Image (cartoon, rainbow over all chains, first blue to last red; front, side, top):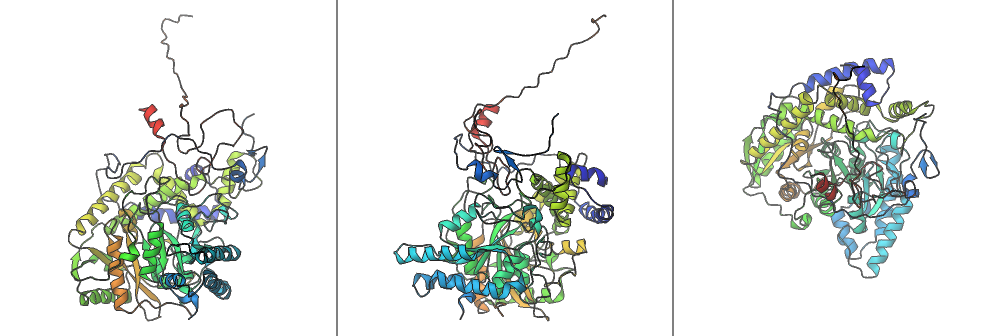
Length: 87
Length: 485
Length: 63
């Protein structure tokens, strides 16, 4: 188990102590989860008893920009401020 | 008798007969919160002003002769992972410490339409991950029966509040036992509804194929009443099921003559304490006295259900929690130099250890090379488990098991033993995997006077049978004894 | 240079915006040129607790 790679994928960082502890705990849990029965897992994963209902293509306006950006950490001119990504 | 000690059913009738006002009930519960919550710690946000305003508005409606729903004017607590518009919803996480949702969960819209009174939001394990409420970023909740012990989790705040009279009833959520286990530890009634019977829109997602919002209360009738109020098809949640949902509380028939109760050997094995086994088998014998028939059944999938659960739950959780990146809402770290660091610092600082552990596990089982071996295999195991239950229900009407392997443990006792914490889930997770309904009711106490709960599991959409069966036991023992000290 | 030995391979990556009234997973207006962040809702902002609902026209066009 490549913890560094998993951390990168999960967008998480750990201190060396956390990493050591996590490593041991995750190994124990993974050992537990390796107990699954040997089943044929090649078929599709669809439940035919519960077909999904679609939404009609109709536009509806129910929220103001102000309401939606209320929780944003940093806002400027109606946009959310984030670090520069493109030079 | 103080108003905060009464059930929603009793209060509803008193309100209808104008013997009491919602304002009086709400004030009684708010006073109780003021007196006890410093010690118990069930609440994260108490909205006293809002609650009293709502209560006054309902009383006014009633005075004007408006016809109101059974829940009108009843003060309830809401688990803090259910979005309440204008009221902070934190999921007990630093990540959402100051998050105020601009919208209501569908269940909240339904309750508002029925004029409920919202007392505030209740403590939980962070993002519903845990079985003790010790994983809350903000505070620990204590079991009203013994303040040195946990109330269970993740709906620990909800269970403690109801048991202590700090809410007439409450909403919790259950992904792997998070309503039933705390209900068992705190001596109250808790229902995990059939998957799809209650809308998940507005419930901060943990494991989308397992989560359900459910009612917690002091009596079967209260839980049935609250369930009727929140169930139903919701166009916002495509996993919610379209069907007829009757008024369950009005149709309760506490008669179990001829009812076949399945007893699965696998749920009474090693790991379940002797006192718990004794209490649950005593309940089974009481059911026999009432005319039910006990049937031995076998649920062979129990052994790997826990493994399947942890794979499915962590995989779905890692996906659901990917949205927490500090960009549009929630916690944002400081001192980042670029976008990558914004994400990593925000998530590493915003999430607690248990949440990070589950995300990592989820990322692992979904990562390239492992998806088929773990996640897909777990989903097929899920189908096998559903098939086993379907077969089991051919020879019985309900299944009776203990809710938890033991009674409430001491705060801090298990938190560092992951496997022990996970074992707490073993009796409850199969039910979430199978999408079935299950109710936990009190069935005695152990030598330390701590509540023991037994669980009744039913086939999909058989909530009425569960309510009837639970009510029969409740009537037989003369009602459930509460913690209210 | 002798180009006869080379085979031309051209790839086309097409981003097709579907001509629907509402967005794919929510009922917000699917229209360009409006004020920033003015046609949003908790669903397309990915707020906690929200769930997507699939636009039937999108499926129709895709199929």
